Length: 113
Length: 114
Image (cartoon, rainbow over all chains, first blue to last red; front, side):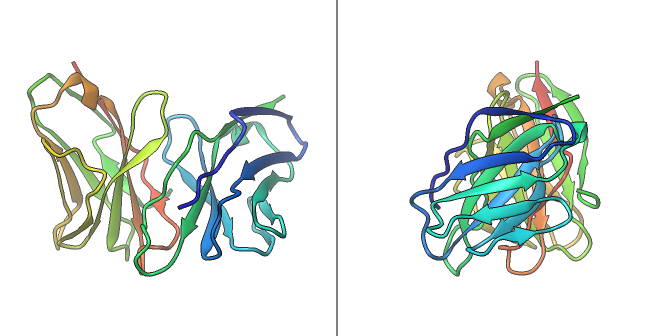
């Protein structure tokens, strides 16, 4: 799986959009971009994933650049409960590829009141 | 995370004792992953199991650690003769289908070795 690079920490004001960047310049054509988050002391929580098109669900939006070398997770209206470590993970979904998730260091997002 | 159960949530063992961690998957999920999170570190993959089969144990330490997922009952991660370096949070994640789908994580078991 391709490596990812994320800033170690970010702050965001409550109610504002939180934009979390991720670089994955070595991503392969069959690799998806996944986002998980881990609120302190809890198990990781799936947020969203995508291949090349932008994706949106009830939690967030995922914007992937045209060359797929980077992406941005957008939390449109951050709340204090969104304070967590956010992990960007690149993962192939094809027969023979590893199925486990490879977690990096992630970005500690702190939502400020 | 609703549905994936892990117990106990906290476990204290003395050096040399055995630790048994249990993971009950969500209904309909037949794949289980175990991950370990050492203090101040990210999660690291340990083992991937389907019912009655170990599919990938490339992340398991070579000694003292074993895992199973029997036909009936929870998946169990067993650590024999625990050492202080085993102190960590152990998370399981369960998946339906082929194993590539979204992973649902449990709340974790925090093991402390005295």
